[in-house]
Image 1 (spheres, rainbow, N blue to C red):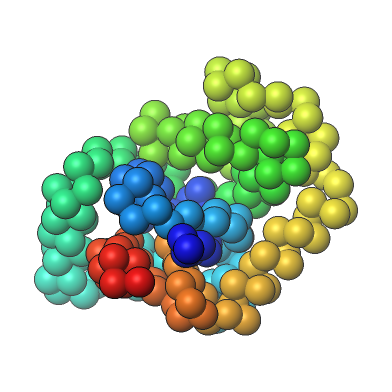
Image 2: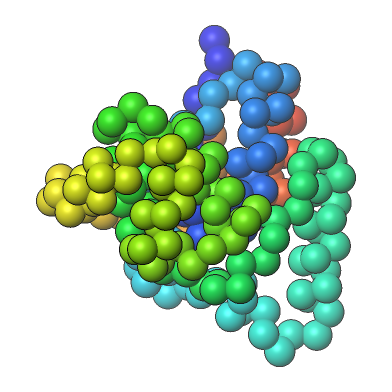
Length: 201
């Protein structure tokens, strides 16, 4: 019986994007399924008193360079392209993460995630500007009107809040985070551990 891994992600996390690129090959090799759970990373940080690596690594000698080395190793291991730094980072992802909830409900979630990640980390744009988001959705042939209407609905807003609160309750403090058999694995590098665990199952 194949396992399901919960993957807590925010489109504003470059490391979650790299994990997203690596996941299809892991699913193909192991038969596992990654269940994508949209969360608001800012909400997670607030609830856990955490900050982004862009803040936490400031002023620390050698650690940013090591993080860059780990990223290069990850890219080589999984054969995925590097992300393009977003000049507008950090981006407030509230609008586009609510959009992810709408996409789940409307049945175009996978395409939405692929395309919005592209607009964040392949051809980076200011994805907290509603006009920029609308143009990006239209460029990707996604239903901008449906999404922009949906993100205003109370049930969509509440679902993103509930996902975020549930993630924190299960131990999440950042993204990418994965839960396998009730245990938390944090960071894109932990995909290697997850795959090894799946191979032993």
